[in-house]
Image (cartoon, rainbow, N blue to C red):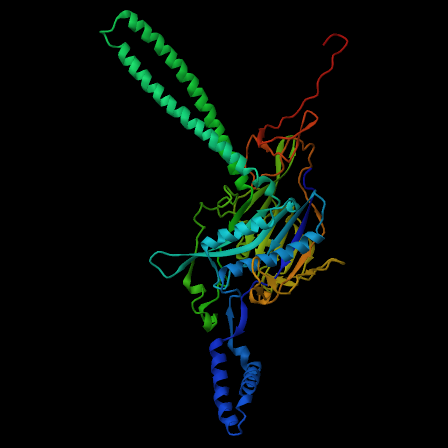
Length: 550
């Protein structure tokens, strides 16, 4: 059974930097009041009231003039591991809400999206080694079977690495896309890896034996060609050479067979590895990706700012107009396929295109070559849907989840030939094209967001409590769960014998049957003890005999 509908689920949370009073100005004002009230209160022996007066007047001063001294800072915890763990714990809360309210129909694909900048830490970005750690933790978070019909876009993760002979940092802005419910596939990896090891061992032994036999053949031929040997011995050697050549041919066939087995095992392991997750890298870098140096709070001078970072450049990855179709899971490109159903044994994938914030405004997908896109995804922080940048096919969906003060959550369908918009959800009123086009808030009757619990987060393995406002200054956000929408892809005529969805799609003539996923063969359910290659076929009805004997 393939997916007939899609349900869009957005975690709307503000991921912008926090705004706070400049720490230098706070110190100046506080020290001034402290000096003044120390003198005044010492004359009346009332120094015990010093803190009360200093705090009260400092707060009053900032109520009057504080707006002139607003600076920005990255929200996050100083302990890197605690910061990562707290953010994943918050996503877990949002996921629990989403799961409890989402459709349980297995023909509905659930697409859960988080805004840009969800993972960036208190320094503005994580050391690049931690990007892989975050991806691994998120994969584990949604690996259970309950998430089998879910696709996750976990916002973006910002990473950086040191640059040789420079104080500048090279920064990366990755969006992580994750298929859910993959524990069943992961548990088969040890069996495949063990089998690969055994096959590689046999292959090495056979190749070593072949090397020895070839040496023996060379030595025997040299002896046969010696003119001094007797005819009877030469005849014997000729017979021996025939036998050796026969053994070599048999061994070469065996080596060829084991090379195919090893290659097949490696390919299956690669397919399983590849189906877990993939990334899309942001191309166009915005001035708001990092805080401008003059806007950064003075107590954060060692944190990453816009002037001290160099963005990794993917614009030269291919000649323009380049293809955005992904070749491997961790290339930077943005169009990927999610295998859905089979029609006469042919995969009919759902094609997604993902843009990160400014990439959409710049028309990254619109101005590139790629497969026809069924669902256009946009994760952002300060973006709305631009009509001229929509890259989905006519009748395809566009889904935006924004973490700034602008776009909110938008789910729409756009027909370029009629210029017609069909809006299913728009949580904020926004203007585009210099204000010439305004889209009003459009929330279907009865659809209400689910607020995420704002109570402190408890970190795994410790008694530490984390205030959510320490990692997201504007609170825990809310989850929007849209009603399922019809998915305009070909319908299946048969699904037996075909494994659902490689992720990403990799063309192959083989599929794999897993031990706890029976397949139908000749009308019977068959369970395999190990991952077993199977080839899909189209069965033809048997012709019955006729009266004339045909």
